[in-house]
Image 1 (tube, rainbow, N blue to C red):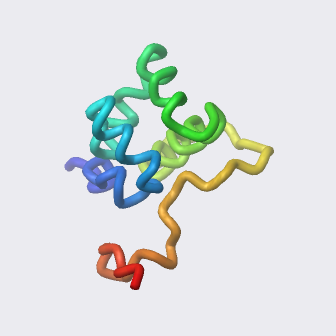
Image 2: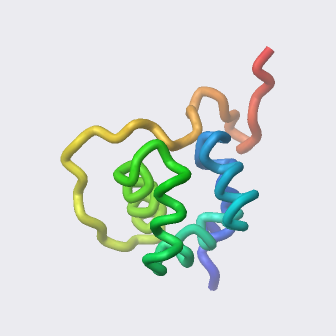
Length: 99
C-alpha cells in the first residue's frame, strides 16, 4: 500500500516561497516527487538553489524521508524554518484566512 505521505502537496508542508518555485520551475508537486528528485545529484543541486540554503534543503529532504521511516543523519546546527507555520493550518489540513 502506498504511504499517504508521498502524496502530500509541498504547499501543505513548506513555506509558499519555497513550495511554489519547486512546483513551477522543477515540476515537483508532492513529498514523493521531492524525494524521488532528491536521489539525483543534478536535481539535488537545483532543489538546493530554491531553498534559503543547501542545509535547509537537506533538512527538508531528510525530514520528509523520516516521515516514511527512513533513517537520516542528525543535523546539529539550527536550520531556518522551511515548513508551514503550524499556527496557520487548522486541524482539517486547510489554510486559515489571514484576516
